[in-house]
Each structure stands twice: as C-alpha cells, then as structure tokens.
Image 1 (cartoon, chains in turn green, orange):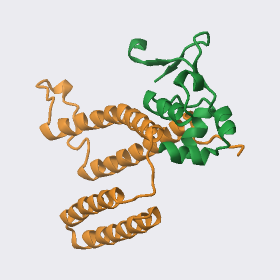
Image 2: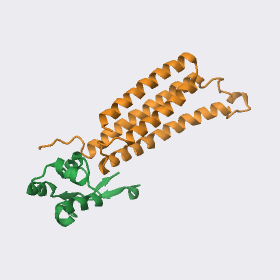
Image 3: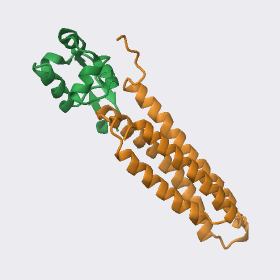
Image 4: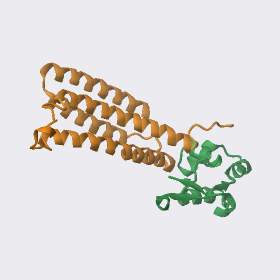
Length: 82
Length: 148
C-alpha cells in the first residue's frame, strides 16, 4: 500500500530571503511567475512543495540556480504525502 | 469577463433553475427540469471559461485533484452498495424455493424511498467534497497567516 504513495522529503527554500533582497512582495512575485499569492505564501511556509517547473520559474526569476533557492534536506525524515 | 460578472450569471442561472424546478413539479414533467439542469450547467461551464481574473495555479489544481479523488474513493463504495440493492430490487433476486427462506418482502425499497436515498447520496457527495477541499486547502497552506 505504501509503495503506491508519493514520498516527499521536506524541501527548504530561501524565497523569502531572495524576495527581501530584491525588495519584492509576495503579490509581485506571484504575478511575475503566474501563480496566486497564496501559493507563494504556502511555498515559503513549506506547506506546499512546488513542481519542478515552478521551482525553475522562481529561481530563473531571481537569476540564480535552483539549488540556491531550494534546498533538498536529506537528513530530515521523509514525509508521506498521499 | 470579470469574476463578479460570472458570479452574477451563476446566481441568475441558479434562480432560473429553481423556478423551472418548481414549474416542472407543478406540471409533473421531470424531463423539463432535467434538460434545463444540463443546459444550465453547460452555460455555467461556458461562462467560467471566459473569466479572466480567476487564476488556477498548480497548487489549486492539486487541492481540487486530491479532494475529488478522495470524494470518489468514498462515494463510489456507498453508491455501489445502494445500486446493488436497487438492482436486486429490479431483478427480484435472489429467490429461494424453500418456504423457510422466503423472507423477502414485496417492497424492500419503495420507489419514493429510492428518490430520498439518491437525494441523500447527492448531499453526501457535496459534503464529502467540501470537507476534503477544506482539509487539503488547509494542508497545502490556504489558511496560513501572512505577516506582510
């Protein structure tokens, strides 16, 4: 049963820091990459892990590599997302 | 089209459907409301396609997808159980030859009761969907407070 479940590791991110560096509001960033402001908030609060596509869009917007914005934390226990 | 215009159209369609439903009951013609209901839903879908200021991003889609999947997972079991009962009622099976086993009454499920149960199932589906939608919206950070 568990084999069919999507397992995700917690993904930390520095969106808030990059936003502060670029003096951007969540609304501005959301509009720039074509999502809702609530989605940016959910990503920042680590409630939602963005798709690879969205993660690339965010990092490209800040003109940095994806790994500078999103940190894959292997030491943190796995969360099972159904 | 602005989303407020869409909500206005949606409200008008709902009121029109309610009036048609009442008229249909008065005339004892269920076909009238059935056709109107399908036309009404098609109109709502067409109107929704033209709304420009509602943005459905990947998180919204994920919430909708998860809520729909969970609703269907529960609903199909309940619906199947009810359907098996009604099919048995239609086919009049099983029947046993021995008199000791002829416990089946003539009307296990009267037609009026089937209507009430179907109405209950419809309400169950709506409540399940809304419940799961709230649950997944909360899980994916919809009710997070913002410090900005």
